[in-house]
Length: 139
Picture (cartoon, one colour):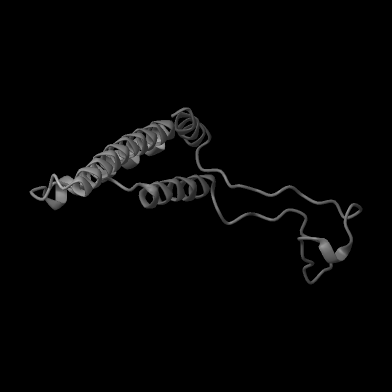
């Protein structure tokens, strides 16, 4: 949540500025590694302008976070009577929780794993008891 607040603050306070790479001095790097060009008069273009603006960079980061969380969220099976809208709403809600508090998603997964393990042990215990009594001829 703090990251989202920081992103909103920086995008609103600086307006529409360009992301510009650092200038590289001619003495530090040989001609083969310079990111500049020469015009017809032989003068060197010292600073290049990056075509992407800050808002575009931030938007691509936010879009990547949303896409990654959408793909990583696997909700439980829905009720047979649930509509498509309700299924979509439940997945979006789970996706937003995954973005805001990823620890909560890990906790829910651990809880589901623990409960499935308990059910497995109970099932195996009852199965062993059934097999034991079957061998005695009670069933």
